Image (tube, rainbow, N blue to C red; front, side):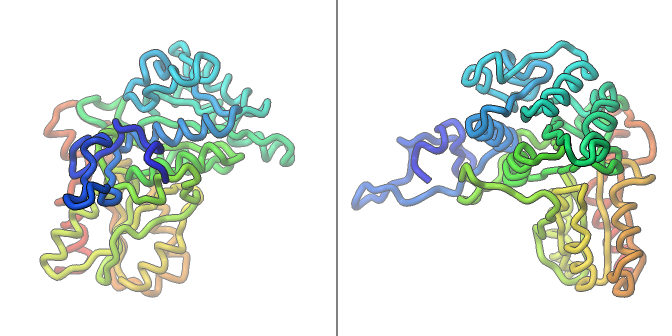
Length: 366
């Protein structure tokens, strides 16, 4: 990697934005002391992934509401319109069914569109395009017509946006054959999965999280490469443990790691699995962990009925790991109600660290 690979506005070191002039140097030689420990926000990781793929392949383009001149509702597409212009960064009317249909048609014609929904709640307006047009066409054409498209945007609960803007669509889209569905947590996840999604010849739903956009993560050196990809369909063990397996995706992965740190002080070692991909699900990684820990808790922000956790529990029951369980698997989910607007009620509808700790102790009977 050379010094020009990252613009100074993306350099974060020890929590501070730094430019080349502030790089730590040896007092004796004046030479740079090597790479700082990079930290990059989820927003900037997504931005860089799209920037690199737009530069790499002229067939890639981005369209959606406010993605161009306004730099995106959440500034994820910041700077892309100025760099690539009106033909590749396209502002659309407020008509999800319309611009999602345009994007699917463009994919069928050989382009690689990135279709942004300002929130996945609005994808309900375009779900016929996502399911019937994008997901099923490759199968219905006998493999003759691929649809290489990415549907992306924030998913799940934010803060204070109530029932119509707080739904998690992981189970909705994960239910549908023909789609691939990814749900990144960290900046590394976000860059690697977004780049893989754009290069994939299948329709891929990328479920981001609004509350994660501004969160900085340590960014390993390999993730800084323009060739960095994370394979779709492969989970990651974020923390190894021996007593209980915690499986989650998106923002709750951070809650699981917090709960694991607290439980470790009480002598309970949790293995934390970041799913990364909802469909196809990496059930093998979960099975191997359960065979080691003999206990399972799933954590998600969505509703319980027919949810991601329910699918994991069913797959574990049907597979070889079931006989290794020493206690029933437990699900921690969002409350089975439309999201309330009141802050205190909202907090009680979303899984918190204390809920994960309670579920783990319940499973371990301690």
